[in-house]
Image 1 (cartoon, one colour):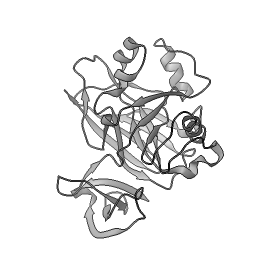
Image 2 (cartoon, rainbow, N blue to C red):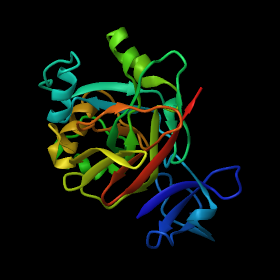
Image 3 (cartoon, rainbow, N blue to C red):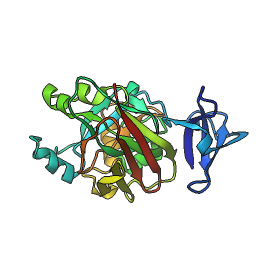
Image 4 (tube, rainbow, N blue to C red):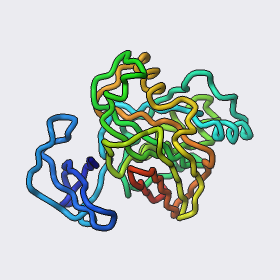
Length: 262
């Protein structure tokens, strides 16, 4: 099931289930998000081309994992980065960084380099605290595409990642949440202006999704709707105003965003 957050009138947002084949999808409106109550339809249906998609979830926090693909670790070493960490490397993005499909990514005026980082995003469905890896996937609501946008110069200048990763619009999510998905058997592709720049199977993660979620849940309580970004493969690079970046994950869909100047 594909759960979207959408606006049919350019105003308030509702939740719906996206149905149909590519190019002919419709959105069947729900009375509330399935994280809040069981699926109940209102009877209203809209063509996907007639609605505006927002971020499919509004999380209390976005927990991110750095250096979780070996090929990305190696490309960062060439820029002065460190060896792959023995345990997952965690950092946070504020909820104010979250935007949806089609929303602009704003290039900060005080940054000289803003990079894309396509990632698989996990959306939690239950309150999760100290749950072991072998049963933690039962607490997952679904999966979506994410882009861990990074002001690379600020990340390196600060020595920690809050400013470089935390600007408004620096966490596109979407286009919807797919509830039936195998995080270990998919493929991620990022394109910049239609040219493939990242291309990797999710199986190449150093720490798989259950390991990541269990590790995080031993540090902090994950709440329903919280998002975990699982790391990016090699191929990260700069994007500039006027370009369009898209992150596609087999079995989920494509998250596309234009880049604009502040």
